[in-house]
Amino acid sequence: MTAIQISSVEKSYKGFKALKGVSMNIEEGEFFGLLGPNGAGKTTLISTIAGLIRPDVGSVKIHGHDVVTDFREARKRLGVVPQELVFDPFFTVRETLRLQSGYFGIRNNDAWIDEVMHNLDLTNKADVNMRALSGGMKRRVLVAQALVHKPPVIVLDEPTAGVDVELRQTLWKFISRLNREGHTVVLTTHYLEEAQAMCQRVAMLKLGEVVALDTMSALLRRVSGSQLVVKLKSGDLPEGLRHLVSHDEHNENNGGNKYTLRVNDVQEVEPILARLRESGAVIDEMALEQADLEDIFLQVVGDKQPGGPQ
Figure 1 (tube, rainbow, N blue to C red):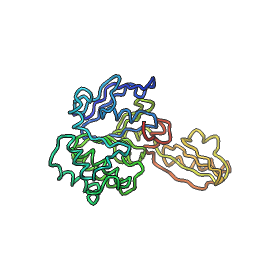
Figure 2: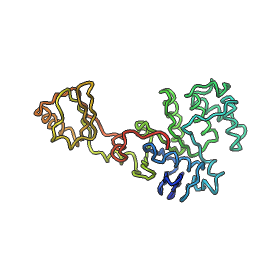
Figure 3: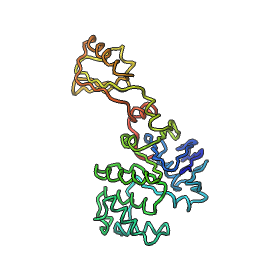
């Protein structure tokens, strides 16, 4: 069964086209990554999925329920963790989660609320006013709010932005458990190592369009072989090796240059080192690395880092 069906969605703001005919299906039980640089249209697409923005053209359905024409049923099936810290300062954590349950007509939900708080390490903050929580604790409450009505589809918009390692580990442990139990998870993040570790499929957006949509393993196969990272103490990269460069970083303070070279296998490393020796270049540091999702992102999208909102 399709959890989220996005069909030819377009959205413009005062002549600027944020989404340009975006289409994709996210299947039930998937852990799906939505990546892209600033201005790619990620937040606009998430807001459309959540029913906060109406598309100019196209449609979005959650488990077959249109987010515009059948919004009540669609929203029952969806939990969204926003990027911004939004909270009501007049309630405690438990009161906040009970109130959120009430929005969905759920009463006597304390058993599930207790379980969610336990899994997010919020139990000892249950009776603390929201105003008194740290930023990381507030973000945990946002996650709890999104999960309080047990939605089968969970959307996480930059859930670990600016939070500590403990929260990241706690969050991913709980979200991974929910995914194993059948929940569909959609993640946007600029921590590409998180997306690579968690997601089964990935869509990459650029300027409002889908520029890549495939399984993680298929995307990683797009970058063949490995990468040889070489930092030169002196000298420069020979002209004959320039065609292998995928990234270069000039570091004048340390008197050297750092290059990332594409190699298909380890046998190609020694000829590269021989060319460097012949040119008189002196190597300061060297490492052979496997291609990862960041390499795919650089190749497909063309920006060093995926961004925050938009």
